[in-house]
Image 1 (cartoon, helix red, strand yellow):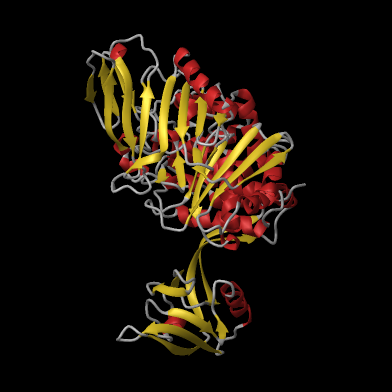
Image 2: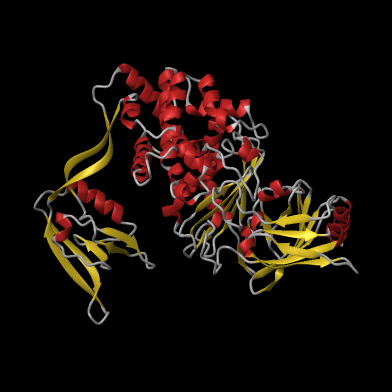
Length: 610
């Protein structure tokens, strides 16, 4: 009784405080739609505009969340009339504001929608699975009144028994079937996603930071306890990155694992100031553990950029008519670089593993327009022509970070790095003190060296390809764009894994001379290789052993499962002999055996923790 009384008293207090009061029913759904009622704050203008966001921070894409709102209506006060006019995909004009009693509408989710245009990346979207789980990115559920987005917001949830709101917000009141979550304003609301479900949570204490790890895994293949074991060492590595103390007092990792493909065809995460929301495939933990660490490191590091170091465009973000910053190389590129680099520096991955990540990014960057100005792409990222190059922020953007890191180490004789530059920028500016977009390169040059300013203007603002060979040479590495080699291969076949976790051939487009002798067919399931069962567990060991011990002329036997003309499975033996294949490989990194003492010193500074 005390809790219920307190809740009702709390609601009365809300009305007196001139705030948004949302009432949300997660129990009584209508065709998987969530009903939302809004009792609005008071207004000092006769006509007001109520909007759902078109764009939200961290997404760099126009999603128009108003598309997922249905049957919105305004309920007038007794004996009054209120006029409602929809003015675009997301916004409604309402007048007179003094006669609004409440606004009522229904939310449909973005994950399972029939709307196929502008598909919302799942970590930025919403999911409604009655009695199971609700993924609530608040900007997909709740709107705001333009020019009134700084008023307090209270959300009163009616929830299924046993459900818990996993979130980083600490201003809430919970009971068995009703919760109240409180936010300072709409910007804070948008920054704190919630996953409502039967809880699976673990809490870690990393020095003075409380870290919540929440996990939803429909088939229980992953747990919060397992994820916490993966992230604990990473969090200590991040502590060292931030010079001994994590930059927040509380942080929440909200993990949603799905056993189905996503509508966007992608998986990943979205960062927030004190949390991050992940949508990843529900596969056996051994195959996703490094992915979890990589993505978690990236999202947590966003606390530094852009959540602390950012321009005025982000500080004064307009959810419906945003102006985009020029500096995605900083916000996403340096973050992605450090997500992998800090793991190498702290011994969580080896130098070879780190360099393989760099090589993969070089290869992936080749698929984008390498002569497009990065700052111009960033500033215009919402436009289709530029947006098609957005994903290069994780590839070339990370390489920009690497180049700056090595160049800074060279200029400073090993005493100053990109990490230190970012920490210095965070001290100079900070979460509520933005920089001016056009002044950043000058600021960085004044803090560092003329060569850094020249690099930024020539290769980030300009259109010249990154000077990778030159940069790698500073640390005694030789980068070669293309070279011909002769090697033993596995045939050049493209494979994937089916629902039974069997490895099968998806394409023969890249098959080489060794592979052609076996007369593979697309769809063949590779059952065995040289009399050894070929499975997800054994494949890596078999391939490694074959590549290191096979000799030209050795017999090779594949057993494949292939459908006959009647559609029945049959086992077919395919025989051949080992032969070397000539091919051109792109983007290789070798150690310069004749490196100078300076190169040895800088390589050690870059790739060790000494």
